[in-house]
Image (tube, rainbow, N blue to C red; front, top):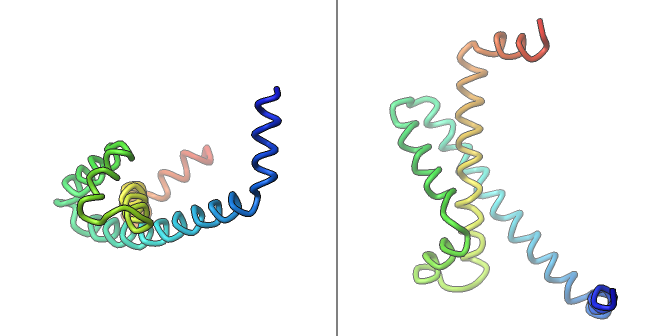
Length: 125
């Protein structure tokens, strides 16, 4: 219990420092989400229009998504260096795959006439 009290005391004593780090983390994450959203949306819309390349693009996105984060950072450091830019690039790479997959699935499902079947099954109609 003493250890927990000591940790809490350190957080209280250094609240400005921890607050600054938290703000920096949230800023980097927001930038990465912005870029991943734009890139993922564009790629997802494009592969929904070009179904032949969809399995290849989704496969590539899945491969990048399965790379452990520390390994991805290690692979990026020789090219980008150490710093915020590397963190944003890594987070963007991780964010692209769900955006591509969900955009592709949503566009195919909603714009190919499947919405009645899906929503009918969900609502029990």
